[in-house]
Length: 65
Image 1 (tube, rainbow, N blue to C red):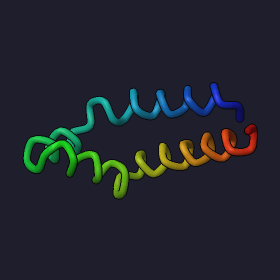
Image 2: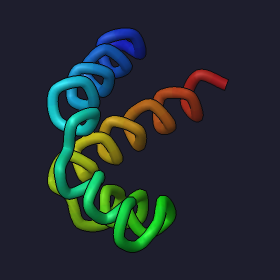
Image 3: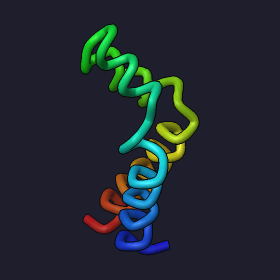
């Protein structure tokens, strides 16, 4: 999978699941932006997938230099 495909998949995940996420909106309202962001990164299954794609991109960038 090339860089553009990975970025497209991440964009698709964010558009499909994250932009209108009720949990993110609730946590942001009740606990603040940082708490909501941390939840998305550490506990959300979609956040986990996005993180894996990010690691893939990072790995590809490291090998190309």
